[in-house]
Image (cartoon, helix red, strand yellow):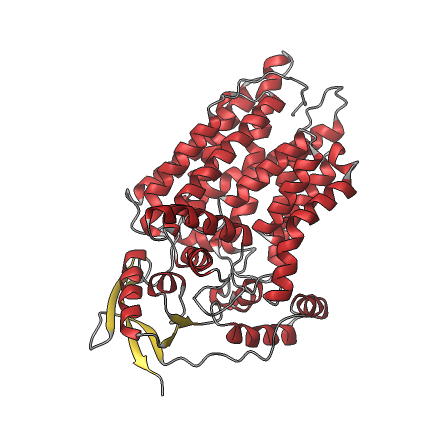
Length: 505
């Protein structure tokens, strides 16, 4: 199906990085007022680090529940930059990072276009498939843009046979999410230039990432964040659905959204099978070196399988890595196929052109789903929080003033409240004492292999830490607010509800 090429020329537009940056800015302006509660957990971490120099969700309470260290570190650094205008502005920092990730995606597609002589449309589609994907946009604030950006840049350095830069990017990739090491290994093995220098590449990657993980392991008690244990124990929230069946669950509630988000990835899986058949079943002297891009899609499949085995719930942002990886291969494969058809009269150009056209239709359909949510968004397309972001901001601000320094037990969703409250709001994400109890429970119930891994991970954890005692408790219930210390809220997912503050005995 796909004959590989040594073409040095390309029609890839030089303005792709600018296109990515501009599109990133546009989508951020659309979604900035609708960030999810989990997104605000990351922003609260970044704010706390930039303002107080502490690694934790709330001031004065060290924790290790931030899934993506690199995302927090970048947001904290950009938040420091925003302080030149006065106070810290983590949301502005998030906007800057969104623009930078869009530019990185554009740059990566520019380089891939040069390597494989891709048509101009391929780069545009590659960027848009990420930045217009409703599943991605519904989780902005988390590392959902950083993931495809670092993975695509990693793939570029594999394609261009640049071992040193590949090693550095590999280190940054595992700092983005440790589980992305699956992609790093598969892509490294797929590229001969990287494979021949595997030990030096691994050394550079370790030098890049190890300082953080050593500090995290010793100072914060674990090199894998507590979110792995927390999310594994929360898997029952979605019963009977699991990660492997999650797309079906989302299809039941959002059929069109799931189709426009996942079908490009399915096309990538089909293209991967076709590429493998052509690569290993046909003797062509010049077969394009799509191996690292194919490995990107293969890594996405392995990632999906691994998460299915881990027993975590189908949180929608967990699908971003495999979906964007497989979608990227679809675009690259169809683009390379079309380029080959133009160079080789024996190949028909209509099938790859139709495949790219179908991908373009899916991108436009995704944009239509995004636009149907309203501009700007009042809530994400995929959404399940009890309150909208503005309502949570109002409650958090008033709650901080009401508490006067007292501690309060979280109602179960903590991110936005913690960000705006700037108070001691407590649950397993902010209180290490509560996290310790969950860690002990997970170690006791895990299989022998997982139990051993968790014991190693938490070797330096201070297990004597006791949960902090709250002075108040914030409770959510459906229906309008009644009585004092009660705040009425509304959610597109849950309707009208209210939070009530009660004194703990």
